[in-house]
Amino acid sequence: MEILTIPTKPIEGQKPGTSGLRKKTRTFMETHYLENFIQSIWNGIGGVDGKTLVLGGDGRYFSDRAAQVILRMAAASGAAKVIVGQGALLSTPAASNLIRKRGTDGGIILSASHNPGGPDEDFGVKFNTPNGGPAAETVVGRIFAATKEISEYRIVEAQDVDLETLGETTLGEMKIEVIDPVRDYADLMEQIFDFPAIRRLLDGGFRIAFDAMHAVTGPYAREILENRLGAKSGSVINARPKPDFGGGHPDPNPIWAEELVSLMSAEDAPDFGAASDGDGDRNMIMGPGRYVTPSDSVAVLAAHAHRAPAYENGLKGVARSMPTSRALDAVARKKGLDCFETPTGWKFFGNLLDDGRITICGEESAGTGSDHVREKDGLWAVLLWLNILAATDKSVDVLMNEHWADYGRNFYTRHDYEGVETGIADAMFDDLRAKLADLPGTEIAGRRVEAADEFAYTDPVDGSVAEHQGIRILFEGGGRIVYRLSGTGTQGATLRVYLEDETEDSARFGQDTQDALADIIAAADEIAGITEKTGRDEPDVRA
Ligand code: VG1
Ligand code: CO
Image 1 (cartoon, protein in one colour):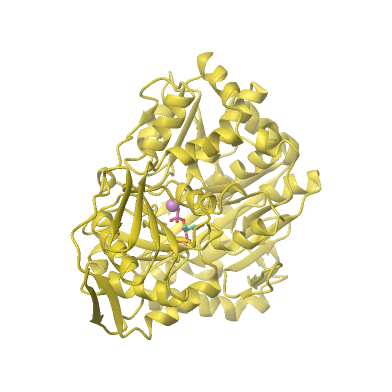
Image 2: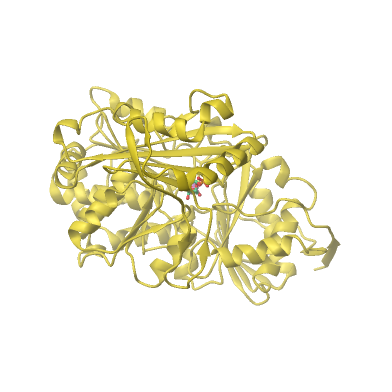
């Protein structure tokens, strides 16, 4: 088989963001674009000669083509073997599990996660290291450096590999193993949770709805929830992965998962509702007529995890991304657990998990996970909820109300302003930075500022430092504003404003979130001048 060496030049902007390299699909389809980035991964990790990799993704448009290119490039650079999910499908947590279980040298995940898919939408490539997690900043830095130096890439000339038939095949000297993408993952879930207890719950008439949003979790949820746990057939909706996710955003929040929300708001709503995103690492949790915020969800899961077999001896510690509400901190305090605060993005949990400092972690953006893999894991969160509901025999409503009574309630919302001109967004952050020192002690929208800073994180395991991870304004009495720019968007800048306040007053527990946060929201605009600078008087998304 002929190995071609193709001359190329560095392409601007191949800098991975919060979670891999994410661009418009058409950008990835430009000549050399994907090839340059893949070769730069190989170059950045010291080559793939003799290595074994995992490959799969969320099945979005262009994944099938990209998978063939990556296989040809792995073969050309001497990889020993690639383990591929059938049809090039693998959820992000399933890929993480396979990398770990098979002891491979890492893997490539083809996904732009919750971003829409299709020729005019988004595509993405992510490299995970042998621990199963997203490459840490140092590795990402080497890959990015390689994109700026590349002068050629290697690829073999060959026909497409059949990725539909399970079993072993070869591409030149390289072995390819096409595996069932679901089985190993479903087996892992069965080891972690009390499946017999969940089965009894479902047999007893407890009804669930899981919205796979036409994305990768469909086959996983069908196998686990319907086949292995006996949920009524049809409990999993939108279960067939489609290259364009049925035209929607595969983002499990109350706006994009409207089908689930309307199911859960109906008179005869199921007892439990959940959804996941494009690549299966996010989750949304609902009870009848009730949305559980991701920040609350991770706190509830940490408080009750011991009810699942894998966590019956308790947790080593917990962690949350900085913008995530501090509901988790309250649980950690009561239980005497360490609670780490990390920058946004799962890669920052990797060292804490590898070093045995934490067991459970989460992000406000609907990511929750544990040390069973090194990615956030949507179905894992759903199953832990079901395990807890089965073990306590309580409803979502009762669990949530009891949680607030025990720990207080953290009101929480995120306001996103999408497609803001990059220059305007950058100037806003410069202005904010310049203001920070003067804010403490001032009163804004009736609230007194206690502290203000720009978040930097020193990793307690390897001492690496991540700077510029968001601007924080803390108010007396527990209120907080965080400003950040998204690192996953593909157009202009997305300004994220995270708003939080806390109360232990049970009379306020039922209050509407936006109402409860009205003064903090007003303060956020006053401090940053959002309306004035962007010309927007409303966010595009209130999550
Ligand atoms: C967003 C979320 C972040 C999450 C990341 C990847 O990043 O805020 O919490 O880890 O997406 O999630 P950003 O930089 O846009 O705020 V996924 O499910 O898109 O891989
Ligand atoms: Co995702």
